[in-house]
Image (cartoon, rainbow, N blue to C red; front, side, top):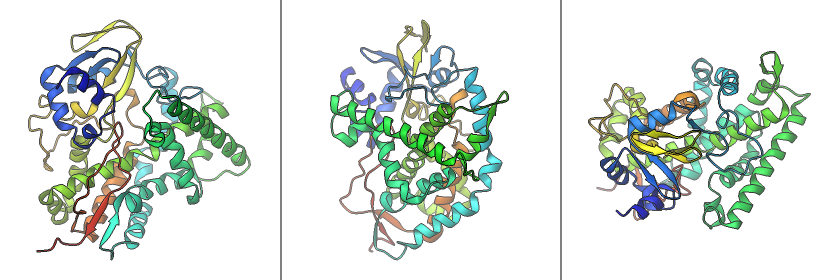
Length: 398
């Protein structure tokens, strides 16, 4: 594949890459652990190179220069650097701690079954519309203390930031795409500013109320800081678990043997979650900006250049995973699907819980399912989700 084609793929402009990224990942890994792409910067693809980038925030910052989301201020905590980043994470890590997330297992299980109840007797469903989008979205909205009828509005906001080119139908950088993303960002600021005004005298047991009470070194978070945290939670909380479910169930519709294994051995689901996150890597890459002249895996990097850490490629690097293919009995799984270093995914414990419960309850109640004949899953590049996922329930005809 010529370098120009690699460039287009890695910039998220090729739908085929999003649908089946592993061959391109392997090609990159075979060529070089890191390479320079003119007009883009440096792409790190090996596990060692990606891990090094993620664990060196002094040289590779995730500040606002790394990714243009049309925001007024840095998103918190992702676009902040130490030392303030550590203070923000100290507050937020408590709200998403494993012990706190464990308390959600019962209500999450109830929600999964309520959603399945609505279509379990149907012959065909749209998995995305009826399950992978509403399930984690309802969990997130409930955690924020918002009414469920806000979901369409919040989903439109999220898509307008994460994938404006998909919404508008024009490439990134096009004036129409930029204008839509900017208008969406402005609407998110207005939404959270209004929400904080409403919550000032009406606190509850929700994330926003907890943030209103939170302190850093004895000082309360400012309204702008809480808004910037809410912005970050919105674009992460409404998308990544949906994308993970799309990717994982997409894989299982094409691999009946592994699907049957989960049905017959539900105790394997925990390891299967980790393995399928590794193999599918719903968030394909993360961007960083070099703060100084440095190098990645021997490739020179200049101050101010973008560095794209290709997590998906790192997760199929045979130097880190000698047996690259999917195996549910992998006991040690050092995948980077949740990132790494100080900016490791804040909601990883919640995501694991949601995916594990979804796989357990779905396969307990719907052991047989498959992609509808003639259907093709079209994943959006960058964060691999689908708009439609037509699925047949029940055993295939003999």
